Image 1 (tube, rainbow, N blue to C red):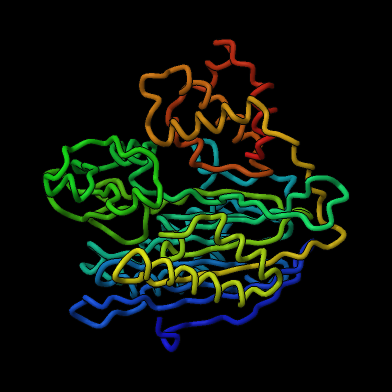
Image 2 (tube, one colour; image 1 turned 90 degrees about the horizontal axis):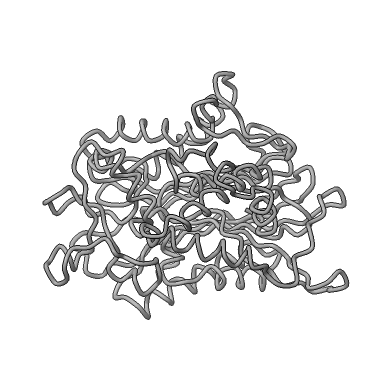
Length: 438
């Protein structure tokens, strides 16, 4: 690791309405000893306190470029996105996410005006395509952006960079040293996801296929039975190919740029999530897949807990640990970018609900069904598919707390109004969703 090839944002502070925020970032160039030309760091980040000139707002983001012109794509995205979001939020034609938890975040849909947050991703994609021209055919960038405003955290992402949130979880009201637990606030958009493959086939204007490199080389038969995404499975992940061709070969299903991929269903429209910050909110981590390729969410958050309050120290240690993991697992190391923000609740912060002593049967069933659906195992289990769809709608109704379009998108075109006639107990499902915090 060449520490001279590193960009650092040492400390940035913000004073939100109900939380004090301390944030930092480290962007470390990777190591590619077998490259025929010099490697250029294709990651970059945004760390903007007092966004829009408002002390009650922060904008944090990570952009991970790929292919020959990935650095350019990421740099254009990082420069364009904040400016575009500010312009769209000032335009009455677009709905805005707000800092008031009592008002739900807008969703793009038939009955909703376009969301400024989601549209900013698509407009940024248009700028990348326009500025790079032909160079955007096989090059682009992933993006994860978090907008902190008031007592709300709004996150949107395209690609396989990731954001996780740390929550203090006391075992009882007298516990003076609570441990932190991970709340995943993005879900990697990769070809492992059955719902994303279904969406891409529906949106593609050219024939698309999904295969691992082993399948392309004829080492194993073609199949879409990829199972669940794990660190081990990432050795040869499923990728996007034009049917009967060997390109573009990207492992993500959403990105900015990648014009050939767009014809195959790769989307610039993000998945979004909104979460109310409360007195259990402790930490937000946004990082490129250089961090999460070989590190579990829990490992990253454990580092943040150990360095509590020292945002730069946490970023430095996460970067070191990620680089060490690459050295153990590979002959190269990807670029590594990490943004860490710590939250100190003020007395006015909302009180977090006490966690249940043990997960309920409803919670256990929901987690099982969600794993099965994401891995594509419900095609022969319509009962599971239906139950999961009902719970998905319940989760959407609870979006003022937290929610994800990833859940809704599992069931495009689902006839929601038919649920109650089929005897689904919505109250039980809403209670289960509330307990899980979805």
